[in-house]
Length: 274
Image (cartoon, rainbow, N blue to C red; front, side):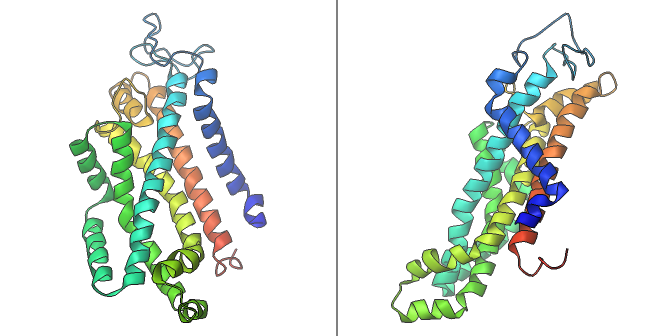
């Protein structure tokens, strides 16, 4: 882990995530303008000392809207991954512990869901359940459940065959005691890596939902709906598209770099390959 922390890409990833997290937490104090305030004297203004990233077609400050949008991005990434873990991991562990027809039913349902692209599942759920922050979190979280369940199951299958599990069983430990006290703690490493990578996917999916109009709706600014409203202005004011696009790119890249570093640090088979 010390080696991973010293890696420059990991430092960059932590710096990006930390800065965006601080911006989201302190948004009310650091936003230079009200993100909904319209300045009709500065419609589609370019970069300036007053508005470093310019203004949109309603004269709203882009920097302030980016900062407020970071709250949505982080809430969705944390909420969706947490929901996916809370549902997917128990399903995978129950499938391994109960075996037989329970395992077959759970995994066939997961396989059926995996057939559909995750973004399509999220779009369908968001369209059915409505366009709110909670709906987006649920939609993306449920789309992640099959992948987390499969990872939890595959790791638990390997742990289940180890000697200490047999010793615990011989000592009279029940199936759920073995599942939560022995199998789960020894299956956390790949789940932590997948959760970190899943946060980047959640940010990207939320932006895609916002861009196509089924995510969090205006006037709440999100990086996705900022891209949607800026797209028709691409030839007149490209900075409106570049700013949220760059924010999405940096945050997704940071989560992916962090997940890659965690994988190398937590998987003993990869420690000597770098």
